[in-house]
Length: 90
Image (cartoon, rainbow, N blue to C red; front, top):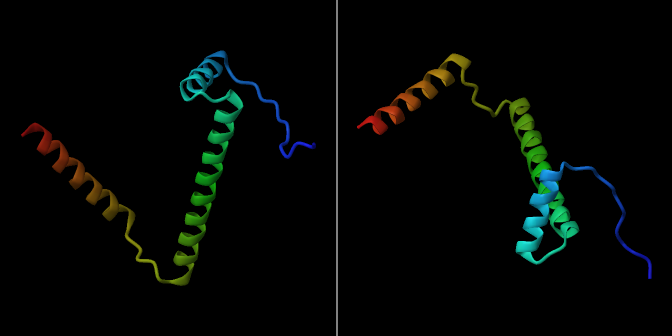
């Protein structure tokens, strides 16, 4: 029976390999399974990020977006940071 998976070879540091092996042992799975799960998660995240970027670019180009000047954004961020720091000191 032919395999429906491709073969790939990668090099990782001994530290990464030990961490993968520990995860695999704790999950009672193979190292290959753990790496495939990690790749699946990365591919899902990459696809999500790409979709979000494309959606935002379309929105920006459509004229629907509300543009906020750079200085105003940073002023608001500074206010929030000061509020949070103030709460921690209280």
